[in-house]
Image (cartoon, rainbow, N blue to C red; front, top):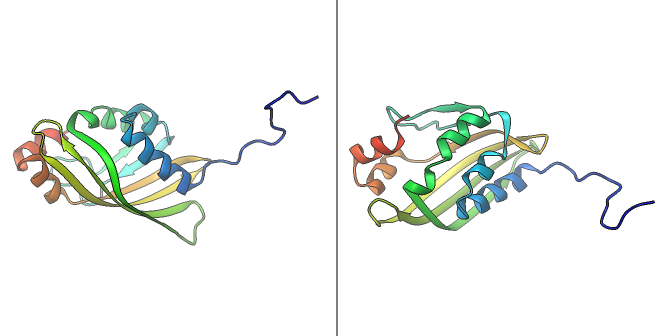
Length: 154
């Protein structure tokens, strides 16, 4: 006999699109632990346009969590102003274009940045996330190259 609310079938794993949508939701509520838990234990985040002294690749959920933990202390992301998700021929991969807006915590200056991300899912978790954003725009937003370097040096 089936209990009330119990399902006989298991939920299908989250798709790449589901994971991307959830990542933005968690970013907006500043739940960086929950955000990092979207990654597979051996998941990877890459920054192909990384500036000098900036990590180009982080491997493993623990490293990603450590990297993301203080992100809300740097940028107060308050809204996603634009979002387009492109499906690819690989059902486990999406390409997302989005713009985040908010405030630079240290200065109170407005923050607005465009991103392109390539997210690959495996078994309902993020296996790979390539984050394409402009380090030059980041330096400008944070008030200069020294501030940018201090904020992101690992």
